[in-house]
Image (cartoon, rainbow, N blue to C red; front, side):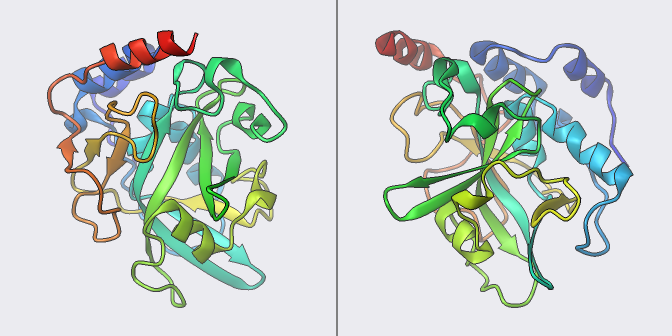
Length: 257
């Protein structure tokens, strides 16, 4: 079931469409008012129609909203008859055309980044540093290139070591994901990668994103502070803390023009 509050109705009617407004939205809403889908999947088979609708309710939101809501959801990888399941504990939001750190900044569209413009729930995998793959899932509406980077997860099924999905590169290696998966849809029949509802964290923390140069100070990384699988990086900051500074992001945008 969905925990609906008055703030949930307010967030639906006032979805932010610019980066500065999105950051302001997250700050004023506060972590305590983020709607959490609390149902727990009894198994790791593909989700049914009702569950898909609820999950798409998360992914149809702007990336800054979807990223914290994905924490606790379960990602399932199908490899033949084998199912590997992990619980998401760390994500980052990339806000598309107005985000200097996003691959689709200023509407940049290439053959590689085309999945970012697909419907919510489209998989985008890229190769970085000549050694790591990174898994992203599109958020917002089709044609709006927002996405959520899946940074870390807790293994739930046998065959995965306790910290084998700590960090985006390890996660992709553990689940056998590479660029061949890019463009797939999480909820397509027979998909080799899909989402299930899971156990939400008791609280959500945030910090700046990791390993980027542009818009590096913005608190767009979200994680479960109680999970040992979260990357050991910068000190955490509560998602409901004081308003984030957006001046550096605007200055970075102007510098790239």
